[in-house]
Length: 241
Image 1 (cartoon, rainbow, N blue to C red):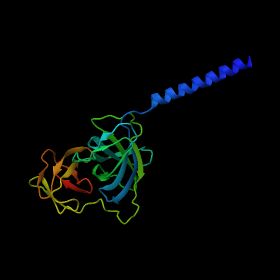
Image 2: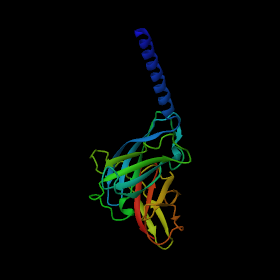
Image 3: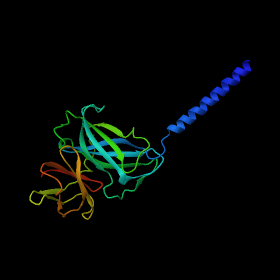
């Protein structure tokens, strides 16, 4: 009798072990699965919070970096109880950054625009929430795409290495902007621009270069932020259209 009970107990344990393996197998994420592992603020200005980020692909398939975007929100607390949109964009402007392989990471620079969407000062909205997403691709897990950071700069010698020096002139007559004296890559490099409205929505995007007038004819009267990047350094300018 005791032997039979011992046999039943062993078999029960064995089948429980198999069931756990099956459950874990079913729950495993196979495909693309992106997470943001960290954000570090490099510059804080009234209209722009610039930060570096690290994205890791913890899935089993590679993802084109040209499909990845970040969306920013400022928040009154770390839980995101009260949030306001603060801009966002694709992270690979020129389509040349390649892929993030399974298990690999990618770092870059992004800007958030808290006061382009209204009056949301740092003392009242001291947290930045960043979401990562891909399009047109899909992820096997969308529950781990967010990171929250306290908005503060840890002073280092290279604190502003990601902020470009530039002269961006807005011509109210021709409704166009002109970039000069870009301090990033060589002058012939392509600069990507995004234009956000006061609701934090992306209205326009495209490519330009130094010395090339770029018209913005598809927007209406109002206040906007032009965000420029060469893929390494960033610059933003507020305009009144």
